[in-house]
Every structure is written in structure tokens, then in C-alpha cells.
Image (cartoon, rainbow, N blue to C red; front, side, top):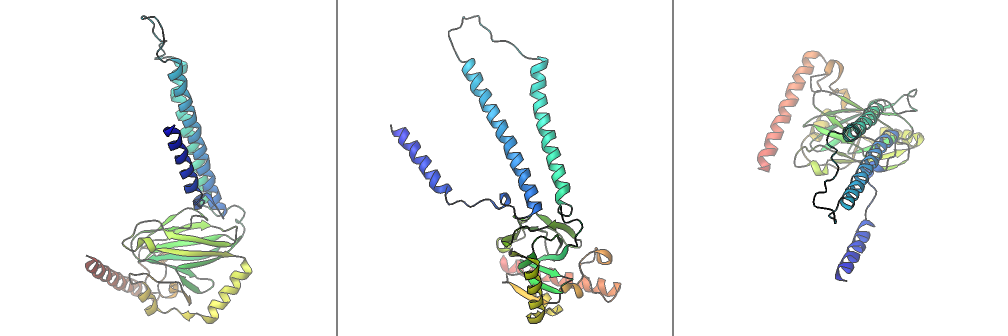
Length: 313
């Protein structure tokens, strides 16, 4: 009787605990790329569930059928070692499972690395997303505006993120819109996303990058194109200009709130791509000036990191 009450209490406790659980963001997609990845997760879960059910069913069958019974002392169960059919099943089924999951994974990987389906013939919105300790900078080069720690995007339009870092390696991730991708120094990686549903989403750095990692997050707001265009015009008319001195202040290690600027840092610190690839965001004046600016900037960042680490220790 006590065991029954204990089991009943356990079930009730689990039910109350689970009522407070929110849906997993990766399984609540709001864009085509995230939907593709969520489908892969569900396929993997279903495959694993089938395997677990089959294994436990066979286990119960074997334990029941070949349990100890009143057999004669000289009884021997059938020997199946080396049986071609049994061996084929034991080896063949795992191989088929691996091939199936491999095909699903490779196919989905190529899909999420390309422009989202249905947007191939439309011009994407290009956003340069750069990280620093411990904040995110979002540059809209065509709109000539920049935000810090928040991101506004139009719905039903392809998004092309250009990722790089002003410090350690970080990982750009908006779980409800797609998978994560590394942002690194001296190179640019590209991530294709799109939002199908208006709303507010959470984004973060998914790669540990020091003591401020936990708060290295940003907010994403998806809205219709007309509202996005209106927001861009408001920023251009009201936000303060982003200067090089101001941007250097933003790069100092620490946490900031949400900031908005007219202009972008790309005008004086280009992204490390094309002719600036391998040089961490040099000046646009000349190649020599670019390298000199890069060296000075890198040295300043190194000195700042050393001071921060000494203070921390």
C-alpha cells in the first residue's frame, strides 16, 4: 500500500512540475531554417524511440520465453551463433539506421546553409553582426544605422548575417530562427535566416567567452517590412552618429544596455572580408593605413584584456 501511495505521489509531483515548463525554443520554430532543424530533431527523437521500444520489447520477450522453468536437466536452448539471417539482422539494422540519419542530416545541412526556400529570387537584408566582450553590434550597411544588443528584422524576407568578432570566438544564435554559427576574428562567416512570424525572440552567444558570457545576449524583434522601414527612418532622424571614438568605447570589456546609432562602424573599421580579410578591420585610407590601424587596435585590445584579467584575478 505504501508503495502505491509513493508512486502516486511521484506521478502527481511530476505532473505539477511539468505544467511550468515552456516549449523548447528549438522545437518552436518561427522561420524556415529553424523549421528544417526542428524536423531533423523530431525525426531523430522518433528514430530513437522506435529503437528503445524495439529493444525493450525484445528484452521482455526473451526474459519471458527463456525464463527458468521445469525443463529437463539436459535441455539446451537453440544455438544461433553464426546464423546468416540473425547476423544479417544484427548488423544490417544499425547500418540502415545510420545511413538514414546521415542522409537526413546532410540534406538538412545543405538546406540551412543556403538562402531559405522561397526567398531565392528576393534580395536579402544584409546585417553585419560583430561581437565584443560582452555585447553584440548590428550594422545595417544599406540602411546606414547600427544597434547594440538588439536587432530589428522584417518578416518574410531573407536575412544574410555576416559574422565576425572583436575578441574571442563567439557563436551567434537565435534558437527560434535557426542554428548557431561561429563569429571569429580576422574572417567573416555567413548565416542565412528568415522570420516567418512577427514577434520577439531571444538571441545569445552560445560559445563560452569569459566571465561575462552569461549576459552576452540580445533581443530580436521581427515585424512587417513597412514597420521595419518606418523604424529605420526614425533611427536616421533621431539617433546620435556613431563615431570612431565612441565605437572604441563600446569595444571595452563590459555589459551595456540597448543602444542605437545613425551610421555604422563599417565606414571606419571595415569587416575582415575581401581586401581587408586577415587584417582585423583596418582603416579605409590605404593598405598601409589599414595595417597600422589594425596593429594599434589589436594592441589596445590586448592591453585592455590584460588589465581586465589582472583586475579579475
